[in-house]
Image 1 (spheres, rainbow, N blue to C red):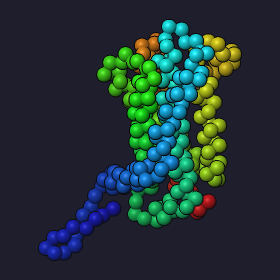
Image 2: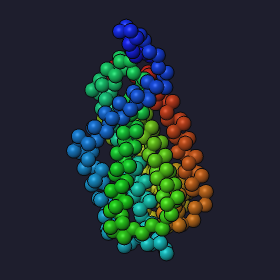
Image 3: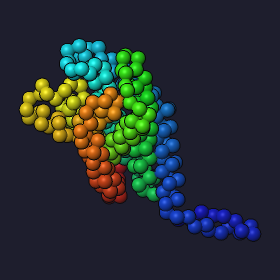
Image 4: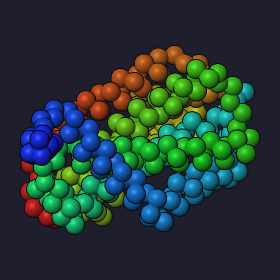
Amino acid sequence: METLTTKNDIAVPMKKSKLYFAFFDTLILVGRSCKHIFQNLDQLLSIIISPVMFMLLFRYVFGGSIDTGEVSYVNYLVAGIWVQMAAFGALTTSLSVANDLKKGIIERIKSLPIIGSAVITGHVIGDLIRNTLSSVFMVGIALLVGFRPNATPLEWLQVVGLLLLFTFAISWLSAIMGLVARSIEAVQWIGFVMIFPLTFASSAFTPTDGMAPAIKFFAENQPITHVIEALRSLLIGTPMSNHMTLAIIWCLGFTIIAIPLSAYLFKKHKGNR
């Protein structure tokens, strides 16, 4: 790929590396996704309302009936709400991709001299920014309703890093859903079916000890539980065990599989839906 520069008033091609153009193409499309967030009232409201709604619902409606031992329920709850919010928020990637496909926007972008992977990457990073903003609101609400973490600054950095890694992995999986689903409605129910069982059949809202044996086995060995327990350990000092290691392995595994697969599906996609 080339751009033009001038030498003695004569236009001369100036060669740039593919990595250079990939970076700037992605940057432009990240900016496009961010504009959608701040110009779309629905997305702005979801950033603000979702953390408030879920935190208040579980804190004051269900909290009094759930025994979490020596840990107060609000301290127990925050990690689960945070991961659930990140998981459902990451599904916005699939909706954004599906919407672009339906409107023919991706076909127009593919006709331009632009790095193809930048389109999906722009959506993923844009939704990563969106979820970061939502997480900030959620932590603020949690502190107002009694959340009292004892994490050190280093542990907070680990919390942020793990949450970003988890959101990044789910966003790439969501991109695949957006590329293969036949309609926006299909994207919505596929995402719900994929995320809903994983978040509720986990240690997000209640300890796994009281669950039926089969559900308990699933809950204790699925990726979202490992992410939740790792965050909970960092935030309030519950036992870490091997949760952090397994959480990172799961997230990296999803990402390593999802990025090339989504790139392949994007390249093979033809025509509007």
